[in-house]
Amino acid sequence: MTIHLPPRTVTDRPTLANWLRAPYNRWSFQHVREIVPTAVIERGAGPVMELPQAPLPLGEHEVSYTSHPDDGGGSGAEPLARLLDRTFTDGFLVLHRGRRVFEHYDNGMTPATVHLCMSISKSITATAVGRVVADGALSPDDLAGDVVPALRGTSFADATVRHLLDMRTGTGRLTEEQSRTDMEATLWAPMTRPGVHTDLTSYFADLVNVRPHGGEFQYRSVLTCVLAWVAEHAARTRLPELVSREVWQRIGAERDAEICVDGHRNALADVGVSCTLRDLARLGEAMRRNGDVNGVEAIPRTWVTDTLVPDAGQRAAFTEYGARYLPDPGAYYRNQWWVAESGPQGAIYLALGIHGQLLLVHEPAEVVVAKFSTWPQGWSTLLAQDTVSACVSLAESLAGA
Image (cartoon, rainbow, N blue to C red):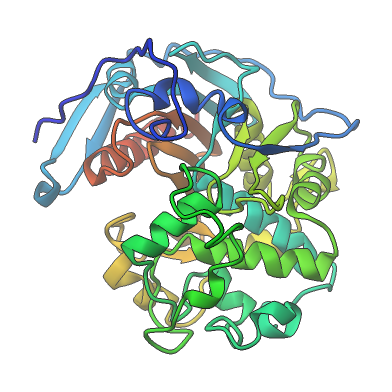
């Protein structure tokens, strides 16, 4: 299948009505704060996690990829540089044992540029939740309605934190009207019905369950926003400050990040974080090190372990709806990370976002890969499968080096 791509440059200034579409996203994903309101996720004054440079000539290195024929793909190999070009890469960074072995920028991006993470934001949010759990302020068994009084009487009242973390609530998919309400309430689209919903929490009560909680995995971004609301109540801290204190400062981020907020300063926990490529890689490296950064438990070790050990039946719950995103046999979704493989030799797991955002942790190869992109379409199963499989291939070629 041929994917026809629009021009890579745009001269017209993106607007609130078009900033998420190609070709405007080529500019807007690096300038989010100029389009929608954001809050700062401060890095603090602590030491930066060092990522020493040890460059390797990987641009011409052949990577293999595999995508399902039903999606128009197949197996093949190509130079890494070609893969990066055809997947609209803005930034690509490879760490091997904590060293920067390959770093590439395009489309005007630099090491200091923050780029929209899209749904990698979910994994960042969940990492902050992991600290709230480790500190004893929240339990995966807690009911959302018990923590947030405003959720009592809604479909989320008796959903557990675990159900939210693993996207196994009974919540139905948003209708087209609800999706439009979501975009407008979060200020990501022009308001067409002023006053109907003024913030992202105001429509939670409109959502209904279509099955019992605790069943099959089904990917619904709204669950991360509900999870964040629960964590904010438990920690008595707004999400930007929580992520700053419990994630960004602890992992030794080099620069402040930012997160989109609505008109009531509610943070878009599911898609709203922007950060630099190196700081995204630092998150992956902290996870790869089992939470340890310079001898300090930056991310709770128990949380990293919990992410990589599925509950009984979790793989089976993932099968029907998860294969579209991650077709690997035995894959599952836990703590808002996609786990492709988990076993005695270590795990391979990812954070993913639409338009081609990726953070891959390959424990057996001691590799972390971070990638920012601006695909012209939100989701392409073909490009996703090609990218993930090529990054795994690259990691495996570095194993033992």
